[in-house]
Image 1 (cartoon, rainbow, N blue to C red):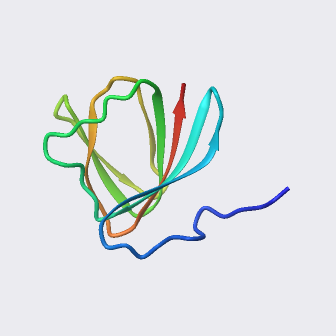
Image 2 (image 1 turned 135 degrees about the horizontal axis):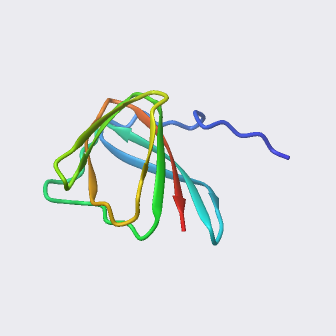
Length: 104
């Protein structure tokens, strides 16, 4: 067995997002996402085929939903986003580390 660490290999990018797949099979995909002062493009909405469970491990983020609701997340917070619920990243702190689990 090889032990790995979620916080190793974080880059010091100034903007954007980085995705690293930690586990993937026919039923689930687990990703580490690092957001650097990121926001989804204006008018862009995620509309995913699968349920998604996300947790903020470090930093802060605001998710916006097409319904108009905004959700503020800080380190330790998590939520489930049901499939086809349109959402976007309104903003993140300078370095926000997420854990995302996509359930197929």
